[in-house]
Figure (cartoon, rainbow, N blue to C red):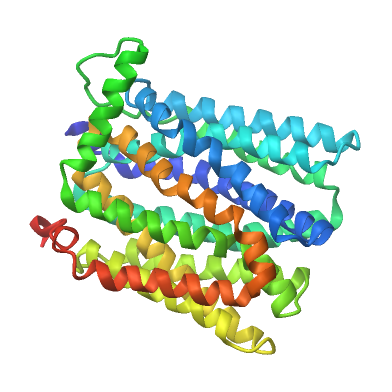
Length: 409
């Protein structure tokens, strides 16, 4: 246990690097959203961009998890960050040369997605190896705070950057952030779990490892149901997330400023939610928080589509509430997985969850464009928000979900 005695110092170093990396990524992502929204104003374009940014990671995720559990997790994160930075550099150079095509953007977003397929599960699987279990929820809260501050500062920085600079030059910010994140990891030792075999995985071994990952989920009925409900919720959340800029532009009649405000208040909501988890040691059971936050998020999204177009500031308030709910939900969900799953298979489980949740979402995103045109962007918010809230209600009546974490009180 002595490796975990200095966990606070380790996380401070990691958090500094991750904060700068997340902020620059947030700025670049928002700048791309502004560019796509204003240049094309199409739900299909935004949806295809989201699919390109998620689908490759979802497809290779389970296989990435196999190697994450075998490789050095610190090096995995560093190489993943470096690969993402390289892809961004290629896109920046292409824009600088005047090649500003949607095909290029989709291709680079897809390649960046491959890097994230290794980075996110490796990061989440490393946390329990550094910190005591009793601190996992608070650490998840601080992680959410870092993400939320990035979500506040990032859009402001991105909006300013895209106003002053070309999209090619704005992309360079992401490369700077990735370099800082890689350098910060050089100063941290992250132990790897002891596994029976670290040999190079053959195809047969890969199949066996995948079965172990699935078995870690299926053997726990509570986790199986939690994955199922969360996947359905993600299926509804992702199309709504993609449509936020268009709801602001088309339904509420906003522009760059209003788009920036919505992105920033979502980040403020995340900051509040992360602060609550990071500062206070909550005694409420995590599964209860997950269920309640599903309900709060769903209601806030539905109301965003119900209110009249002139009530933009009410939309701002509902967005902030949604940010709070999303943060508490994400932190609680990740902590449940970290507590319920054995360290030696955790990388596979996180990768499997990402794939299980995201692959069906692609179907929802493919229908986002025509559905928003046919029914109206605000009506999509109303219906999908209601489904998310219903999932939270149904979860309270599922005994397997409600049994998760009972040993913690």
